[in-house]
Length: 290
Image 1 (cartoon, rainbow, N blue to C red):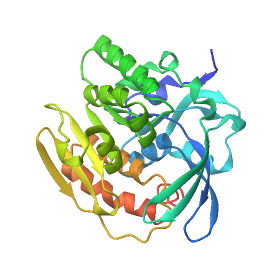
Image 2 (image 1 turned 180 degrees about the vertical axis):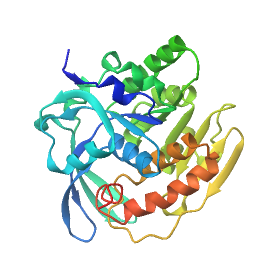
Image 3 (image 1 turned 135 degrees about the vertical axis):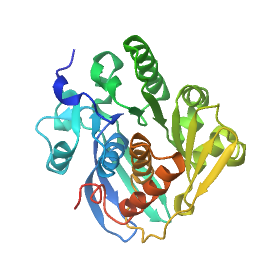
Image 4 (image 1 turned 120 degrees about the vertical axis):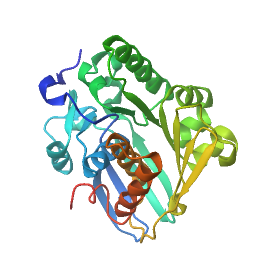
C-alpha cells in the first residue's frame, strides 16, 4: 500500500474534486521557444476550477519534495494522493505547430498506476462534482467511476455529479469503453475530433435525459449538448502562445460554474474566457496568476 497524504479534515466539502495527474512537461512552442512547465489534465482542470472561485481538490500522485514548478499548485489546491519520488512524475514532450495543432513527441505516465480507487479518500465523494480526468486507459477511468457510484450510493443524501474527460487515443483505440463512460457519466467533455471518432459527426451527438456533453471546437468555441438540444457558445479571439491544457481549463472552469449554480451555457461562456487566457500564456501560468 503506497503512502498517501490524506488530511481528511482538510478535504471535506470541496466543491469540485478532480481525479487525475500532474506532470512536468517540455513544450516546443510554435514561436521556436522551448519551455518546461507544470502540466497534466488533472492539474489544469483543478486549477481552472479554483480560478473561477470554488474550492478545488486534486487526487493525484504527489511528489516529495515538490519540484519548483509544482510548488504554487500545492498552495492553491487541496492536493492528496500517493506520495512518490519526483523522478516518478508523469511527463510529456509536446511540439506545437500553431493553430491548435500539436505533436506528442514523448510521454510517460510515471506513477499514475499508484492512483487506484482502493486508496481514494472517502471524502472525495463529498464534493459537489467529481471529475475523472483523462488517464492512461479508459478501463482505469471506468474503475474509478464504478467505485464512485458505489460510494455515493452507500453514503446516501446529496448525490455528487460525476464528470469524465477523454482524449483522442482512447476514443479511437478503446471506443467501447469510452462509450461506456459517456453513457454512465453525468457530465462529459471532449473535443470535436473525439466527438467525430465516437459518433461519426458532431451533429449526431445526443445525450440521455439529464446528462450533459461539452464539445470544444478550438477557436470556434464549444457546444453544450443537453439531450436533443445543442447550443453553440462562441469562442474569443486569442493570440496563441501555448494551447496546452486549454480544453482541460475549459472543463474545470465549466464545472466550477455549474458548482456555483450557473446554467450549463452560462458556465461554458465563462469557461471560454479562461481557456483563452491559458492559450495566451505558457503552461498553467494564467491559472497560477503568473
